[in-house]
Image: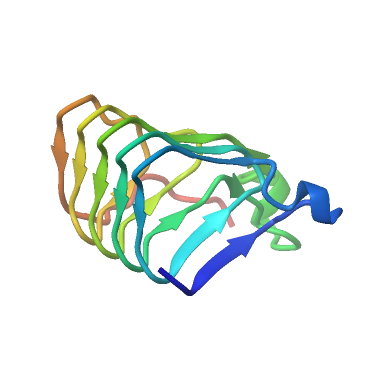
Length: 132
């Protein structure tokens, strides 16, 4: 479903989608955001609801925290067969979501999800304090 937002496509037209693999019988909802800095693999029969973001890289740019705390990095994302991702979820770099797993709407996924698991929520908590 349009629109589809794609970031970090290759510089040559032939490379634009080289980091994207989509299997058979997938549903991709409107406003999907794909960051193709690294590979995204979507296996067969995956459903991705509206306004989902798949983010394969971190780059704080010119921010002072960039080199000291958050150096640029990128890692692939894999969505195994039969995964369902609810509206507004965000899947971050390096994550593999196991076969048949369900990701609830608005969830932020930072770690691998085991097959046939249901993950919900996007709780925010302080995980680290940066030095001045």
